[in-house]
Image (cartoon, rainbow, N blue to C red; front, side, top):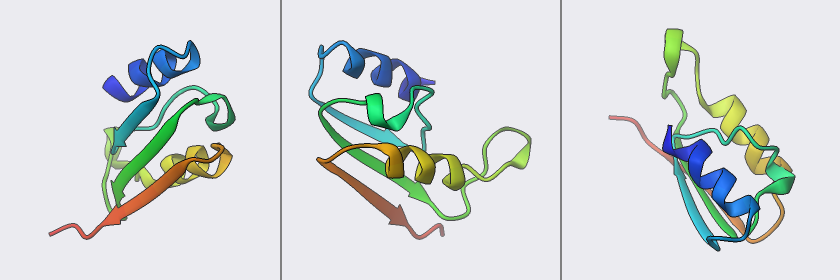
Length: 75
């Protein structure tokens, strides 16, 4: 839930660095401002057991630099 809130704040320029930990910003990735760090696992499941990574990857791909995607191994 915090990922969307921080994404909205980045649109206004209120913040210049954001970490999205398993979060998918609702805003299009190309609208996100500042430094962006997306952290996820390959097999993380969201509501209704739907994998989160495809949407996180989509937002990452849309986002402008500076950005980084960190995929962690799930234990």
